Length: 186
Ligand SMILES: [Zn+2]
Image 1 (cartoon, rainbow, N blue to C red):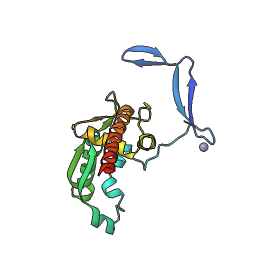
Image 2 (image 1 turned 60 degrees about the vertical axis):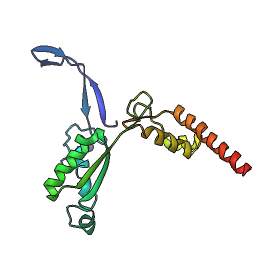
Image 3 (image 1 turned 180 degrees about the vertical axis):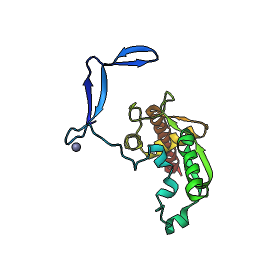
Image 4 (image 1 turned 135 degrees about the horizontal axis):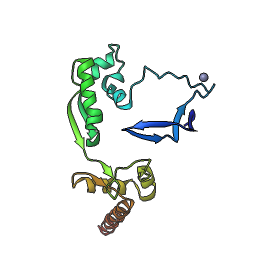
């Protein structure tokens, strides 16, 4: 957050819906180098979702008519989570229709989300993310694969927790032991 300053204000008031309120703080943006407050907003940048909307052709050399664009636009299938249909998928279609005069993909496969054990979306900010690589290190790749496969079979969203992975590690171990016993006998 370099370049952002909270400045305490003295004797400043604002009128919001007929109420006079005192303003205590405001955010002032200043140049990191010279401290100037005479700033101009960048005009050649889109907001996150509008930038993402250009992805189906923006990644292929558009606005040039490249061989990649010829070959890969439109594509046949988009695979995505249901939570970004309006943020991203709808925007990609609208931008595709507008700039390319053609839809970006024929089909959209909408899949469920991997959530945490309480059903919350995993996020770095919340700190409830389960890193698959950590799980592989701890319980083995088979345990993780089996856990995800077993949970996915129920349909809808997956509620993943480390406990489940640990449980399926024991299950995988049982199978392994069975096979060992069998192969020793025969
Ligand atoms: Zn400056």
